[in-house]
Image 1: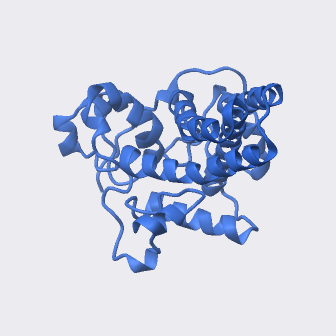
Image 2: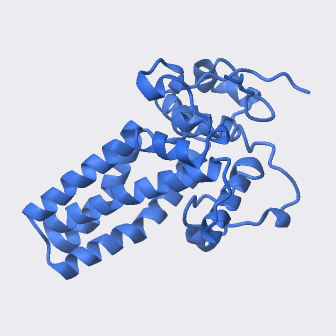
Length: 262
């Protein structure tokens, strides 16, 4: 068996309070997750900005029909945008080839596939999520209902992100959802992480996968993808594009790195 290389995460830096130690979803209860979720700075940021957006809407409201249309539009655009980013950006083999994007790619996706249950890595980085939410919702909201429509659409996008992040956490939690819909989402996402990363990109909505031909059932595929954990960033690739390996302290092999119990 190949010797594993310890891969450092950008989240290994010291933190204060509740987040002073790492948290792993496969060791947590649902109650633990809820407590962690509502203390994480990204969720607090989304909720705070949603409140500000609602205040802007109250100050400059759009007509009821326009408001409804802006919120619905945000809800329709959101899964398509995140599917596109997940498939062609996060799983595209180009970010690690460019020094200016290597650290970002490592933080927002490579580390997550290396250690899927590491909660601090699972939460998206604000410097990447907030601009994406803004671009996906503000223009369409403004086109439908002006400032009020933009505020409503942005608030909807932020709250959808909160839902998305919580369901994503549930998918990695040592917990069997009672909801058949969420249990189905979890099954498909686990196949993306542990069987074949070239499909089931949707996380909470798999309609885009069906539309673009990337939806799959495990039984329909012959075997596990050899790049399911490293996303194609192998030791051979690292010889040409070393920046992620330099940041990680090496290239992990085979499966996610083992963690010391503590």
